[in-house]
Length: 260
Image 1 (cartoon, rainbow, N blue to C red):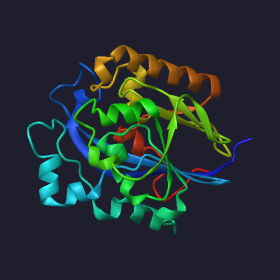
Image 2 (cartoon, one colour):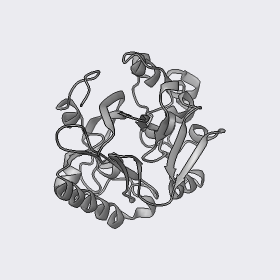
Image 3 (cartoon, rainbow, N blue to C red):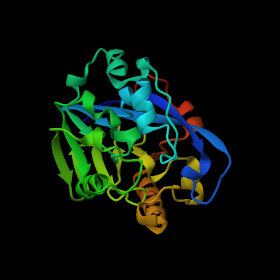
């Protein structure tokens, strides 16, 4: 039986970029606006945060913004993030503070998923062992070493596992070496399967299109993960949630309304 009590999707910022970064070999020249999301899961034994968005300092400080985002070597451009969108402020809207989050589960360590880790120095931080190794390499330009450098309480996953009854980590590599998705069984209704960046858009799922950025150009691995997530969704009657699709995000319950 699930121990999930409530679930919130949380908008932590937005990012405008060329669509081909989300759909490999498709959409070049088309700009899209993508939500940068985190997800809070309240269980009977504590709170889990799936992803933590960007490091606000790297966006709000002009010198840091230029150093990290506004130079030719970085192809993605700077995200947009207001102070009110910082996770500590989003949590405050729920009557919580960062210390009330017990476990941070990172889909992967790209800047828009692991950048806010500094706000949760107390939490146990789960990430796939292959992901942390690739990030420290680094495997691509979307890893900022400063985001995950520190004395964190790392818990390194080697396979799929249950974070809590009703919350299961799903291996979905391809976009990155150790990418992980999250299956959530709600108290009522169908389960939710958070794709993370295994599928940015509904289009990735419908057409089985790999993300534009793939680890070691392994688009075959990325497509295999999309098919795996679709198969799991069919088997468990789960609803697939793409991670950077603004239209899909806007069709969900608005924050701070929870799924229960």
